Image 1: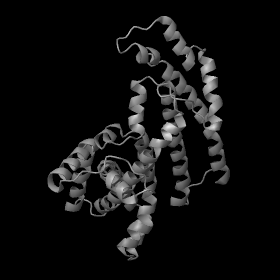
Image 2 (image 1 turned 180 degrees about the horizontal axis):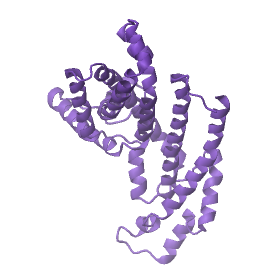
Image 3 (image 1 turned 180 degrees about the vertical axis):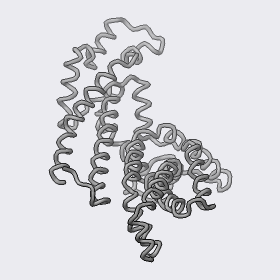
Image 4 (image 1 turned 90 degrees about the vertical axis):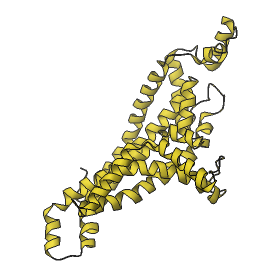
Length: 317
């Protein structure tokens, strides 16, 4: 087990290197030029010498391989370069927004798990009853409801019935927990309900499969309590696919809540993605894509480590 996890950790390095190469190449083939966008898009006349000077300042006049080497040489020092649009260090630009996106992803995941596990278990145990059908309605409604639309409904309800809106300025949790939670609980509820639908369906499906196993039938025949059978024997063995879904959803939430962030006026990673692409900010796009890829790789590693704890029968050779 330890050797396998160590090997997986070491494999992250070539994986991230391959991802960095792909990101760098794909970003460079995006149509558009940041220099022309900054200097010419407003309709003003700019001489060719000014454009070339700006390209030289940004390092875009260098050969592609040289730009790649310059970028890669800073990664071991966590130096992602500077934004081509604001000239600010990219690591600082990302850090300012990452704490918001990370907290929102964690809160949304906790809400999704708190909703999905009880509903999925109840639907599996009460298969074919009104409980099962009710859970199916709730989960299908969650799958069909975009989180940003649900967020708009929440804001309208808060304004119409309580004459109150969440704070517009983000406050870190350690500065004021109350102000922080008042702002982020509503987008977390909207996103958490949306993603709980997928987890609910997966929990129900996995539980139904495990409940048909011989050892569960034997536990029923021995007269064990239903709670012991469901929680200790069935749920733990059914959690492996559920944990996979939860982990992948969590990784997606780090940079995939673009519209939801716009609805709740949150300046997170998703909004930074949109701004960087609209501005053709190559270095910022590279840094953000590498961040998301790193989150996915780390989450997958943690999921594999959890498999052994959830099911001792799993053995990594």
